[in-house]
Length: 465
Ligand code: ATP
Ligand code: MG
Ligand code: MG
Ligand code: MG
Image (cartoon, rainbow, N blue to C red; front, side, top):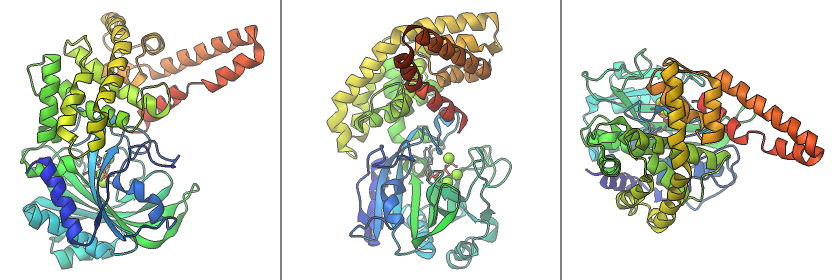
């Protein structure tokens, strides 16, 4: 079953259960300052859950383009390191707005997985929220999952690597206990079941999260019950495609293989297993769709995330020996793979390529120079990179700090982030002093305004993963 068929089967299944098929919304959340990007299917329905918006349906199903490269859900640092994380992915979901609740949500998910998709039941393990006896009993008594494959999990608030069965869209907003379904890819792969010390291996992979949306969390962290309990589910298309295509890693599925081959063609890399190709394939999807939705590379906010992702991809191309613009050429391949499911991508294709080409031309030369400076610093000390060099790379050569950190991580080099922060603060102070000397008020205002918005975004992103 190819990815398109899997997507189609999902939507049709839920349509047959009375759900309206709703189109994916933009990656830029409409009117929601709490969120950098649409990170899941529920985002376009947030106000419906809160009871502030009404639709002419109470059941919906979507394939939602999602980005997790900033804010509460950020998987940028996982790309290239795990088999299951992307910055951009498609989330298949079904939603109930005060209509059905836990029982039907669980029954639908089980029927789709084991009947429509035909997965063997014994390969599936489920989790429920610690105190959720209701969900536990449905799984055990109604669905018949053996007790040893139903695991109770608490809320590991904010833990980077731990199952967490209390789902939140962001620090505030709709949330609730959830129940997740994991697929066991086999004993030959490292990893343990959810909740075990080895849960972050890639053996048991979470494919589907069923969220029982019950609360609205306010800024003080107080949970207010929603007008009506709702259901919000999310299944990563790439993860279920890996299962159904009998491969382990998401990067082995049809869509990714096509993009990896295209990246190999454009970089001249002969080894299709090269990690850099995976990163490039991931990043062209993310960068491409962000531009489709109106973002352009810039120095702050969303534009800076796009810039960071694009520059990371270019650095991986450089690592493979490609010093000329190449990334923009992958847009045509992306359109070929995803343009039917997302006509807005097909329409915007040329513009997307143009924007990327410009960014490549802008960064191309400084990338080359910056890499030389970095290599020279590492030739002197192969274990540490000092903050001043990282700052020079950032300030003069356009290396976002996370790009430098990515290189350091690859080579087991310790990056002096505190030194980078100090160099940044120092430069800011000098700029201020110079500004005051020349033209007091106007310059100060400028100084405040450009006070590292990009940098704050960067440090937020690179630390909150
Ligand atoms: P994980 O624990 O693997 O990081 P998650 O618990 O953060 O996943 P959810 O927020 O529950 O994920 O999202 C619902 C579903 O979306 C997941 O079950 C998974 O199938 C998919 N998904 C989440 N993050 C990613 C990602 N970065 N890349 C691809 N698919 C993802
Ligand atoms: Mg996650
Ligand atoms: Mg999880
Ligand atoms: Mg989850």
